[in-house]
Amino acid sequence: MRKKIVVGNWKMNKTVTESITLAAEVIAAIGKEFSGCDVGIAPAFPALYEVGKLTLPSRVSLVAQNCHFEPDGAFTGEVSASMVREAGCSAVIIGHSERRQYFGETNAIVNSKVKQALSEGLQVIMCVGETLEQREGGVTGDVVTAQVREGLLGIGNISNMVIAYEPVWAIGTGKTATSEQAEEVHLMIRNTVSDLLGEEAAEKLRIQYGGSVKPSNAKELFSMPNIDGGLIGGASLNVADFVAIVNAAD
Ligand code: 13P
Image 1 (cartoon, rainbow, N blue to C red):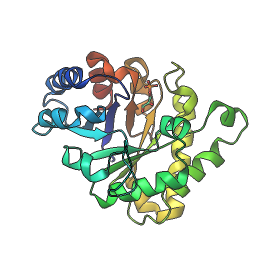
Image 2 (cartoon, rainbow, N blue to C red):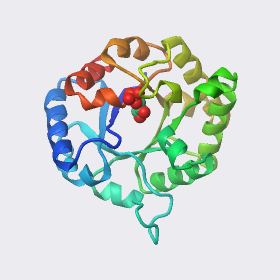
Image 3 (cartoon, helix red, strand yellow):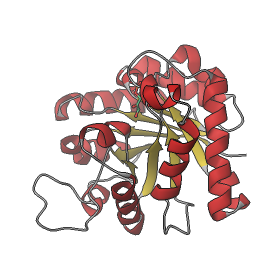
Image 4 (cartoon, protein in one colour):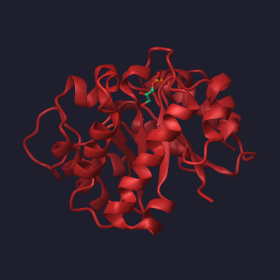
């Protein structure tokens, strides 16, 4: 049985002060009563260190939204894996569709970032997902399979990885994939990983769903056999909604 994992991706929202307030509220609300599920929050870079002081003694883990693929150097404006780890993060989101769409991240870039983050001991949440055009063009399987294969190229051990399936057309649009649509892709991802790294690694891998997850649809999504939790955008900025989603996974 895979333990569910729910992570709130705050994206480019909340200043440092606002992040501290939200994190404190989430930690207080999560308390100790949830034990069946891993919970994380991913504030923006400037807030990580301060929020890390709050998450460290709690059961909520701190997650970065991105990191660079080089260990250090002349990359103005970038942040390294070791920096986010030392700021208190135990995990990092890599290859979010907004990074792919607006910042030109290819599968090859995602692959080098995944390798760098893993080498720093960070858990990696690698995001994959098709656009509406690709879904309507009937190439969802090809796109997502290529993202998984190329993202995992040269990686032999995925025990510290999670894959997040986030259909681009469902992100921030209010349109959720039906639980059947999501389950179909999740199963395909697991089969792809099984081909690459064997059945045991694939069975252990947690695959989160992301894209307009709300308290009203979380339970049904999380009840599918291959959906092992959620990567939550908009709803993670509201404490009551986020806690209700965690509760649905717990
Ligand atoms: P929404 O939940 O706002 O659709 O965002 C999903 C997402 O992109 C999480 O990474």
